[in-house]
Picture 1 (tube, rainbow, N blue to C red):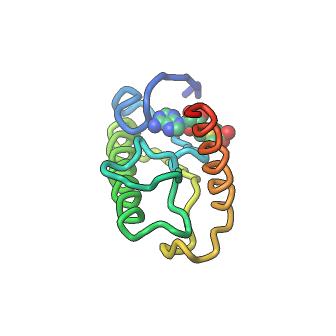
Picture 2 (cartoon, rainbow, N blue to C red):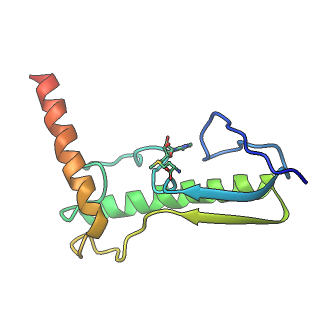
Length: 124
Ligand SMILES: C[S@@+](CC[C@H](N)C(=O)[O-])C[C@H]1O[C@@H](n2cnc3c(N)ncnc32)[C@H](O)[C@@H]1O
């Protein structure tokens, strides 16, 4: 068996590769990006769960992640050969409490501030 690597366009939240064609799947630092902003979300000025997010925002992100992750797993399940292997590395939170220590998530707060500043600049 000759291993080879290919690049395909499209979202990994859906079919990407031919059925039973993958022997090894590695997704690195990508699955924490959701397919879309959760529907009906009112999280003004934020790009993720922040320490001031209400429970409904946490629930909305959580449901979107579950939907996306299930779609990812279902899609790859069709594409991986029997006995294939998969390694997924992506960011997670140590706690569902948004006021708990944010660790690496603090950078997203800074990014949200920067993006909001740019939006306000364009609007004015
Ligand atoms: C932080 S980068 C990581 C790239 C690389 N895996 C690495 O470790 O350097 C996240 C990548 O995921 C891609 N990405 C995010 N959502 C995606 C999606 N739904 N389908 C395909 N690629 C996606 C982005 O375009 C970006 O290239």
